[in-house]
Length: 277
Image (cartoon, rainbow, N blue to C red; front, side):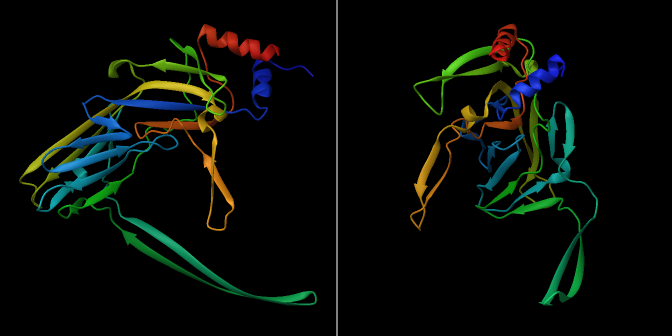
């Protein structure tokens, strides 16, 4: 059987080895960052956490005031690479649910099956103005940061040997690319929110938080997962999950990439060397 070079690569890397890309971000508007980002002024505190498959713009808004605070979602937007995506759309949605119950009786080789289906529909309209009580918070997670199955790494890709997260006595190969400034980055996004301390919005003020992709790293899935952390549950059984050493609220990831998406000369050489083994 004769294979094309691309098919040979796919066959080689389909042998249970998959890859993960981790996307690390930075704030372009000077937000504090540790395990996520924090914006804070005299009225409001906003905390961000992007850690999810494809990244989610997850944030909480905390009202620091002793009086109510309001958000106008029609005057607020998620801006991704200059494309404005609206939080609020003036469209009525219909949500339907169906309940089904059945009674089954069987004897020998025959049976009776009776069922009743009840369907309920509820029409809802998105909330334009959100009321936040004093010293309380709301949560929002409406948009993905990057809806893609993977990002091709082409120019200026570097290769590094890093500590193996499963066996620290060994090393692992990762590929990465650094974006020093927002204008160089392949992903730039902002969260623009309109607030007011009065329901009629005569006292509007705005928060505009910006972010950009600063580093893209590609690695094998095992390196991304790390060691298995094992504990015992209430029944004294072992339970566990991976440690995920790359987890951070300022980053997000894409998993189940079937083969490395690489573009530098050094990376191609590593790929070719692996194919010869």
